[in-house]
Image (tube, rainbow, N blue to C red; front, side):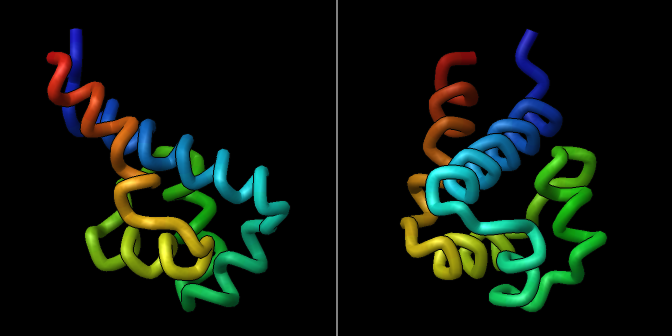
Length: 81
């Protein structure tokens, strides 16, 4: 069964990790470029804590991708539910 909060959080986190991997950007580098504390970013990237809308925009900018790139997998899951 689809649980929106958990699934969306995990999906966005997975997409952020995937983009970081493709672009070879470390958590420390992303933390430095976004101003999000390393420990906070680690919890969010691991899906334990959700991202705020502002953080998604900031991370998308730092990773040089669109916000849609980060949230569309989650949106696809949500619309399929």
